[in-house]
Length: 66
Image (cartoon, rainbow, N blue to C red):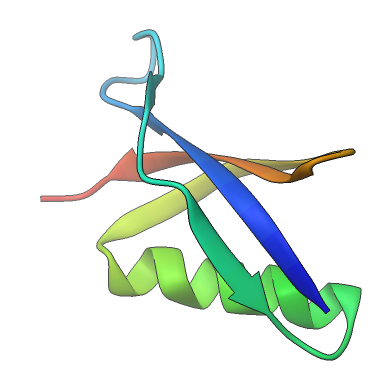
């Protein structure tokens, strides 16, 4: 199973999110997709705030960590 993920980055807790890079995650199960997404974003130095499901794939809101 594969899913396209649209990422939006929150620059501050009350700020407006801005679009980040789109990425693709792949796993055998839906739960695996979520785990793969969390791992990929953590490797990029980002912390997941929320994940939503859309007909086109997943939508992730993240915080960037220095």
